Length: 253
Image (cartoon, rainbow, N blue to C red; front, side, top):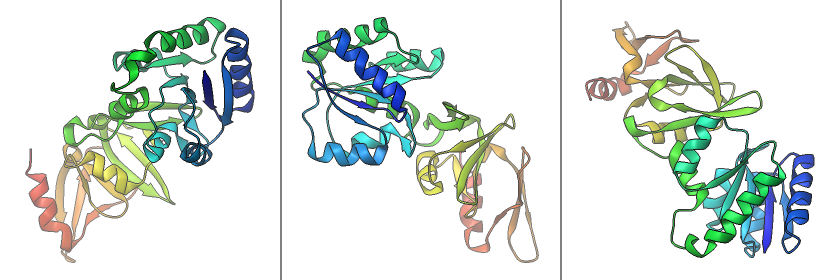
């Protein structure tokens, strides 16, 4: 069996490769990849791997971005530091994981599970697709969650709990209704697509949740100034050109 490891921590990747070889001598670790970009380039011309062990958060993005870009159908075992709540959600969606730091027992169990079920994998939803659907690419009030970064962790934050997204100095952040702020590894355009129609692109800097809008005040310049239910770093304005669109959106349910 041929295995590829996607892990940006070199020591962790080396230890995982050694553990797999020791526990399953018949397994060949074909390649260790460290970034989203490197992985996409590799899988465009190498599709012989039968199983992938992948970290979720890599130095240049999330590993979810790799698989749709190359359209490969290779099962993935995630090596993750998610808390137990998220892990239970992962299992409910039919994929496997190794909780860091991994052990001989967890690696053995994951590979044995793959060996036992690999004949049933074809035609079923693969692990990374279930995970991606769990946390992104949904619309409106059913938009699911956005992955956010806090130190060395990534966590899902429910879209319904987010008051606004904010762009500053090229970095996208969000603030929740309970006034917590996080960094997001997505563009404002991408976030706008996945959160509409619950969120409105007020201007280049702000995407606001309908539930966060308390009122709108008209100015002499015929712009609207919004008052949100949570503090904002700058004044949120709606241009004259977008005013009618905003008012129509505000009345939707």
